[in-house]
Image 1 (cartoon, rainbow, N blue to C red):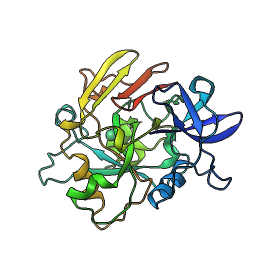
Image 2: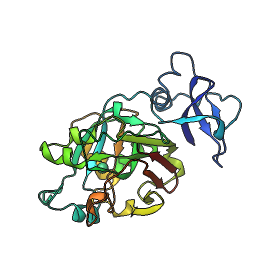
Image 3: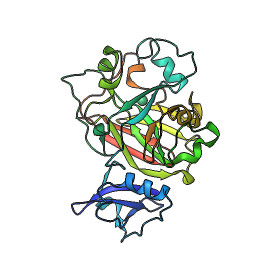
Length: 286
Ligand code: MG
């Protein structure tokens, strides 16, 4: 299934996208569940609930796609330095030391930074001159759990979506900790929908990013340093993961900062992030 959130006729809806991506059928959710959207639906399905009935198909071109989640339970989990070529391109700047202890580098993004798959993102040039993109596959947790073993980890995946982990590099590096540089308003475009785990293999898919039509990132999730089971195992160590938690899995090589000289996002730039098996998000920066 592809599950999208969208606005139609002034109403917030969550719906089932047709296989060819041309139509969406809204789920008939109760008035208390509908505003919460996908977070509510995942919890319902994971507790054994049946898929809700759907209404009439609407052409996708006639609805406004939104980020798949409107409400989050908490911050999004994120991983830094998870592709070797990317670790190399930012060695000595963002990544000050080689991580030799075999653990992923984890940070979070606040839900308030999340915007839709086609939203315009404002460049906060008053606080940063070094704004960069990061194309990423994001994992959506279905069944929750604590101390999830690697061997069981994939059973806890509900599905996948796409995020652009937009980053203000100068801010990221000057505070000794990444939160401020990662959490500016609009710095987490997400979508265009969630694809359920039965329809794609997140451990074996291609992640690409274009800026103004120029291919900048072209990675493959099989090249992750810490694969999806390793990330779920690590993040659930003594911390309960819940249905609807999101884990952004890190970005491949090709970010603007890794170029010689670096190429930062400028007003008018259009960033497209595509993950095979999901689709694409495309955001204009202004
Ligand atoms: Mg990232």
